[in-house]
Amino acid sequence: MSSSSSSTATADAATLCRNRILSSKLYFDVPPSKIPVIYSSNYDIAFLGIEKLHPFDSSKWGRVCQFLITDAVLERNSIIEPQEASKDDLLVVHSESYLSSLKSSINVAMIIEVPPVAVFPNCIVQKKLLYPFRKQVGGTILAAKLAKERGWAINVGGGFHHCSSDKGGGFCAYADISLCIHYAFVRLGISRVMIIDLDAHQGNGHEMDFSNDRRVYILDMYNPGIYPFDYAARRYIDQKVEVVSGTTTVEYLKKLDEALEVAGQRFNPELVIYNAGTDILNGDCLGRLKVKPDGVINRDEKVFKFARERNIPVVMLTSGGYMKSSARVIADSIANLSKNCLIDLTISK
Image 1 (cartoon, helix red, strand yellow):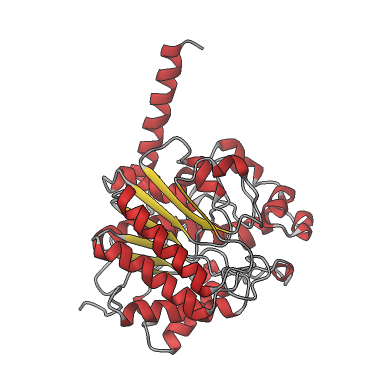
Image 2: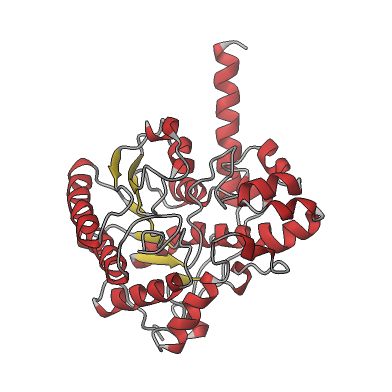
């Protein structure tokens, strides 16, 4: 193919991508009676008990919201329900071949690391597993619009940071972070985004997707001794902060303070995507760090202060977390953000 033909094909692909974003129904107007906390009961995964074969708590998202409602931190009818991401929405980042590969239950089983899923008809896998993921993708994409309008937004789900445009893995089937950013570029007129990925695992999916995109700055603070060991993706981390197994709360928060100071000096974003995995908690079998619950709450507060003090809209995603206690910690953290006036959970009339 000649260089001119290649350039034309690239331009055509960019135009198609832009048109898909502009015609998407994932961005919609939200009334003032709703607060920018996004969740759907369809997020939660119940698959004949098979979901329990993976250490991830697949009912975490619903339990977070239930804690917040029971504790009177927010009202049930103030939560925003997102739309499901359609195939056209997903094609903004994902290849046709990758989406087609998800029509194989064997492929899905490998991505979510639950082998028995391979024997189920794909129609059931789509309904019980991939549909909840697509709803969460819709929530992450919408969160950027709400953050731009209100200063912040929390998707009580999402953060599928191991998935890239053409490869899933680590319980991540769709690249919601990459999709969210591309939508923000087109629909919100944003040109500089910072990803602050504080899940215990390296965010190799978004790192590959934005490997040559200087509009995106990636701060990734992760345990190098655990999955995914993606050394190729590590080359594309703008600010790499490694926290080894056994890192304690004090050590962790000191490294975070230093990292945020450096990030603020190096890059001036118009949007922060905060991947707030709770697998840094002490006792998490996969994260292998030793951060106490109050350390997670303090961590989230530091990131929100970083963004709010600079008037940068911030999107929070709950990402990984493999203990039942994660839901309680996330709910307590959201309550703490409200208590410290970093988010406003009051309803406008």
